[in-house]
Image (cartoon, rainbow, N blue to C red; front, side, top):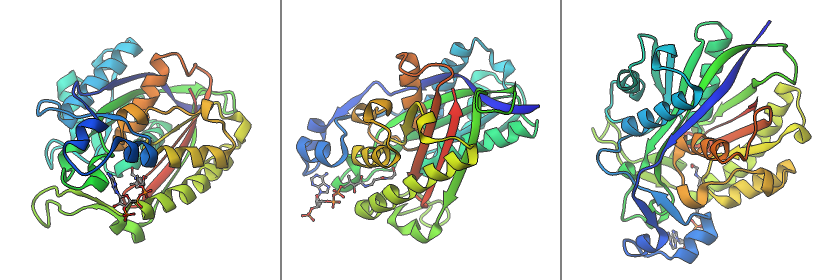
Length: 324
Ligand code: UT7
């Protein structure tokens, strides 16, 4: 018997306030034309003080549970990918556990910045395969606006806030390509590049979170190279081939990175889920936000093969292949 971790439902939350490129033109020396040409972003959601990472994670989790037709009492694990937790501790995961009324179980956060959701999903899958967990909420939640330097035009125009969640259920599979669920994942990190994308502070140094600093071009270069490698790796791990992929759901950082990854893979852009234009870069929340959007709009269907890929600060990166 093969245990497969199947995504049985999705949910998401976006703050009400939308900030357009025109709004940013009033804050920093930038233009709608520059932002659209260089990144593909037009709008992003920006949270108010109530809409913390924990609040948004809870809302996204409740929507996923509702879609699954499940009660919080059915859940035995909660894993949250976030870089912008409400407090240094405890985790956002225990906050969600209490807020939704989930019983005593496993709850913890994962910190891999923009790769966080891929990391968290892979960790959840491993724990389900050992039989430790049966029904897990995996959530990506970020309030990136809280760690932006609103005077730095090279970063503040790129990021947004939001949360996305999935319900992951352990199901019995046949062990072949037709099984629904996660077929494999590849996770990577290279700390040599930690200084090309980081915050200029932290609790054990400046005693504050700090703000995002990025050498955009350097990150861009690594993203294009590493993402195409990791996609080949995950296809090999899963014994699947490019034509098996129905949808690419990438981390939403830059349309040029997404187009390059799709081109290298030989997947046409009409098979790529893109929400970047209206979400901006929501770090660990971007893949589950895009997934929920594609699921609720009926774009992706049960039984189709999805490829998730992401790269972020660390540098960390990874990819997951699954049959939805
Ligand atoms: O999610 C985590 C992973 N992150 C990423 O994957 C991000 C990867 N990097 C990128 O997406 C791109 O590098 C950026 C969108 C961040 C920047 O695009 P770029 O084509 O690499 O531009 P650049 O940084 O080389 O800047 C080009 C010019 C510079 O001016 P000079 O030196 O050529 O005179 C910048 O000062 O654009 C200038 N610039 C801006 N101009 C108007 C930088 N930011 C802005 C801005 N508005 N907001």
